[in-house]
Image (cartoon, rainbow, N blue to C red; front, side):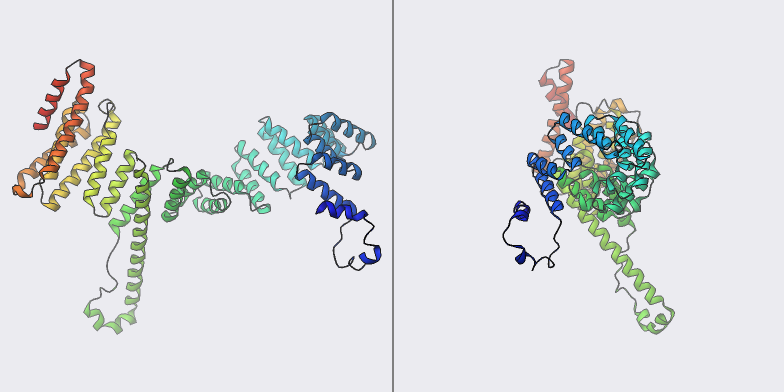
Length: 500
């Protein structure tokens, strides 16, 4: 269409008399500008050779030099520039073009000289060259000079911010990136840099706002979503933080998990759950109804209603956070979560009052810590001991709730096996806690009367004892490989430990 429009300029048909009717009804561009626009269109389509002919006819030397650079015809470009310089030796644009072709900073300096230090293009080129040489201080000074000459150049402000950031000038970098988004609000990288700089300056609210703008433009950047979740948690917006965590899981296909942030959110939910007031708004005594006029006069009823409404909103918000966190934790554990995630999942079930699922999650957390290196790594043993203590406490709560000895027997067996194998850590505080917990469990067993035989779930007991035996045999086999003992002796030792 554009080609026909340009060719139609020289077409004798229709005649001038017919064209005159429409000449004042449309904004007719000049013939050179139409042909230049056609040349630019050819360049954008990759038809550089055709564009060269158009620019030669129009004598647009800068565009022609650019085409030669695209065609990798540096010799032809240099010859053309030198020919033009012989006619216009004081044209700074030609000196800058020669510097672009040869990558020589002396030509940019010559452009500054002939322009009286007023060539913004020469300054920008020198600034880029200094940045590529890792001379960030010089690059920053040159970019400042260039932007002082032409401030309506958003990419220049972004480059100035990058140079300031490399030279550790945070305040100037923040100002430069801010100027960049003022000229180009669609620059997502600039918004992200502004948010990160506010994070460095510990300004979480400003960082939160900047990240929201950045994520409007870059929805698939998991790094931005992760930083956004951290900032949202800093300002107390835990709902947005959990939504950002969910987005990180979706983008990375559950490969990126920030357990520290989930731990922070879990602590906040536990704090809210422990301090929330679940008093019903209708819990008003008859005496208040009887003395309603006086209460309205004093304003106490209005204040009480507002307080109850605020507590109700906070309770609903806490319940919403619990649902969001549970949805995230379920997705993680379904793809095979770590020990820390299983611990969080157990605490989430405990918040909901499901001690049975809590015990299962804690048991998986304990199993995640087990391995051949457990009894050699003190830090890992500490985590294993803490998880074991939490598991046994939940077993005790379940036994108390169900009036059952089964959970107490499971806790006793687990503690005995752990204490026998953890003799090398007998000097630690956690080992003492395990021994004390075992004494509490045994005391609870002695205090709880035996249940009737028909109430005992024998099949579950057999399965649990079998699993414990298999685990002990595995540990003993590893020990056998080091001490050259027979496997039969190992199996019998495992049975003896179970019986004890």
